[in-house]
Amino acid sequence: MESLASEIAATAARMVVEEGLEYGAAKRRAVKQLGLPARTALPDNLAVEDAVLEYIELFCADTQPAELRALRELALVWMERMAEFRPHLTGAVWQGTATRLSDIRIQLFCDDPKSAEIRLIDHNVDYEPQTVQGFRGEPVEALSLGSPCKALGEVIGVHLLIYDLDDLRGALLPDARGRAPRGNLAAVQALLKKAEA
Image (cartoon, rainbow, N blue to C red; front, side):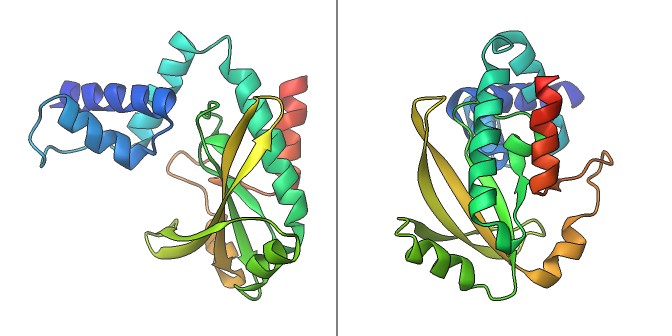
């Protein structure tokens, strides 16, 4: 049973790295690709993350660090633009598993949920409103846009997830491995400085 979960995780990891899929979608596609029943138990996200790190180390070690740096630098640009909304970087770009196909996910903690959207409108930023799953599984409004990344020569998806200011307290609790699941501006700057050293 454990080897089946490992096989699903490894197959999902390849899809995450090579196609930029989210973990949930990659796990479901892996089950389908492996010809397993739809009700097959899926590995948890930590197992997929481990498999992603392994895949990157094996197949992308020469390119991934520079791609990750470019994505973190672009995330920092958007975090600085949206600084008044207490931005926190999360997902693959924060955790260090991102490649050029990964989108940037920034959580904003706002006094007024419409204020971030108004900010984008005032600066003539084209965005697409969506509803996505939040960090507690609840529906959350997201403002999604494409942002050019010179370093990668591509347009990168940036998703600004809108949370209430009260959600910030619970957002800072460590994950199952004791790591911070998201980081503020100073934390992202520290990651970039550490990578330079």
